[in-house]
Image 1: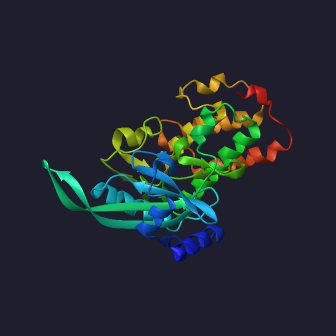
Image 2 (image 1 turned 90 degrees about the vertical axis):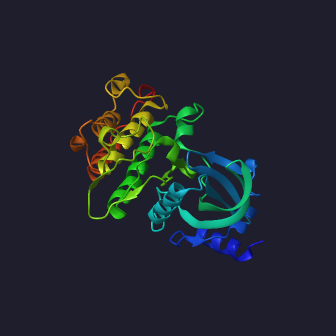
Length: 310
């Protein structure tokens, strides 16, 4: 079944710089065992993610759940954002499918035969679940080295999106950061993302995203800029530093972090800067990377007292 598509998809898994390819509905149905419940590995507001099993590897297949015009726009926005994205801290985009089938649907009190459009996106399969799972599962270690590497990797992925691709993610949260082998973080789910051209901000009446991660100027006034992502990043950093996924008290959470480590203190300071209510006082992603580089230089000189980070 789909020998050529099997070969093409497995080739892309090996060739890291290969471009995403169109895939057939029949092939996706086959590798997910007819989109069976047993293959379901994730679920969100915009779709369901299934594990696709190839002959020599696995992939993740996202089936968009809505079939209206909003879903069409979401599919196109996510597709166009992902098509050129290639970075070690971004989940690799492998393929896509848009399929129309004739199905019996219930409409206005009766059954009719209608065209139903289904849309799919195919990604690399990430084995270690999400950052949310890491924060909520106490069996994971909470070593400072792991926490710092998570923060650094997320920041490098966001820097690539902002600087190289001009993409504003707009839905950064622990659920949308997957963890690869070695706990390498990979940003995923670009369903709400916007690609900026020359402009640096836009105004919108449509507010989407997850409460608790939305920047106040976006939530209250519809103002969107790259600083919107920086605010979400600050929330995520705070949760990584605390080692749990609890709701943050923005004003006071950092006061409970008792540590004698300069590196930890500096990361707490960065997180606090990111969640400033005034977007103009938040750092850019380049400024954050520069601050992390200063921490990186000092890490060889001292080792944080791990038991005091928690």
